[in-house]
Amino acid sequence: MDNQLFDYSPITERAPIQWPGGARVAFYLGVNVEHYQVDQPSTSIFAGTAGLAPDPLNYGWRDYGPRVGIWRLIDTLDRHGLRASVLLNSEVTRHNPQIIEAGTARDWAWIAHGRDNSTFQADMTVEEERAYLTDVVETIEKATGRRPRGWMGPALTETFQTPALLAELGLNYVLDWCNDDQPYRLNVPGMLSVPYGIELNDISLFVGKSLSGPDFVQIVKDQLDQLYADSADSGRVMALAVHPFVINQPFRHKYLDQALEYVVNHPGVWLTTSDEIAEHYARTTTAPSA
Image 1 (cartoon, rainbow, N blue to C red):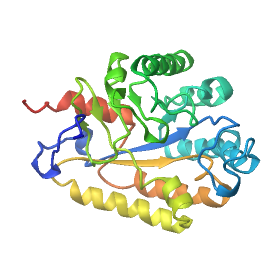
Image 2 (image 1 turned 90 degrees about the vertical axis):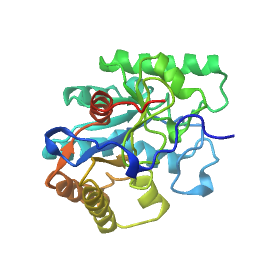
Image 3 (image 1 turned 120 degrees about the vertical axis):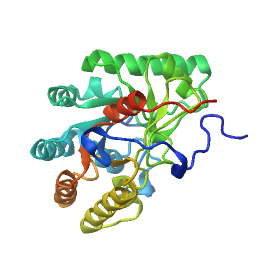
Image 4 (image 1 turned 30 degrees about the horizontal axis):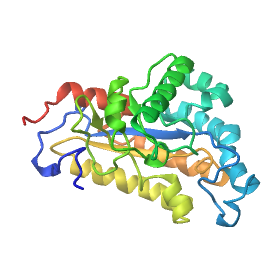
């Protein structure tokens, strides 16, 4: 079937985007804060045990994030004056409330990221998915005091109904479709797609390709430099996606710090959140006429 969710729009044929303060690149750090079921397989560093229940090797590796990695990350964000855009499993609010408290104190943006990273809604009926999404959104709102504006599915998964169901709940953007350097409107009233980093992502780079810390720093620099060059006539978005159980391992952490040092000191960069990018784009651009 043809894709009904969005239309083809070459970036060379769009009206220019203007970011606040004359910035050319809008940058946000997408921090995945996730909960995993102990008896279900998920992202793994060693495939040999991934199908076992329990799987201490891989579960423990993932569990390093909320226990240790996130706190190392918070120190770095505080030092650079950056707010996180948190891709939040709603179960984190129950299992790791200290993280919610720390993020609320820092005015983080909370993006709904499913119930946990072991559950996908791919096989749900419309009514099952509506109930599931409602529970996720309302659980996050109750814990953080703020209703999520955006969504990213666990493993970037959706059904064909997901954006419309999210719109019913008052959300206005998704991060799942990693096909652009700018936001764009979906064929669902009030819904946007905002860029996310599927390649500029510590899972892809470190786990998928086994790159080194210095490789990571150079990749971040190259990404920003190219987007800045591209943005002479119209703004771009740079999303850096990280997982505290990966990037904040002790031997990698300093390389995130070095990469962020480059970003925050680069001219023409708006240091922001995915929420603010979506809001600014929706407010300052006009939908194309049918």
